[in-house]
Image (cartoon, rainbow, N blue to C red; front, side):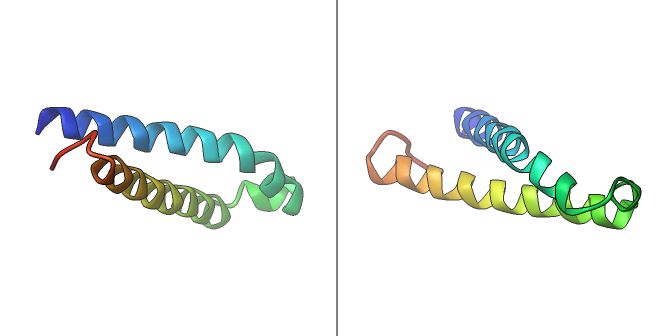
Length: 72
């Protein structure tokens, strides 16, 4: 079970870094610097990144289970 959590958390972290790396400049260009510093916009960005990352982590874990590389 510990291996499952290590894999899950590492996949989650990798997806967060990857999504942030791909989308950071796009969202900063869409919003002015003054509005980007507002916490409401900044928090909604991170909520979106975390939600998408969580979904990709779950899909990846089920894919690993489907091809019998991971059991849970």
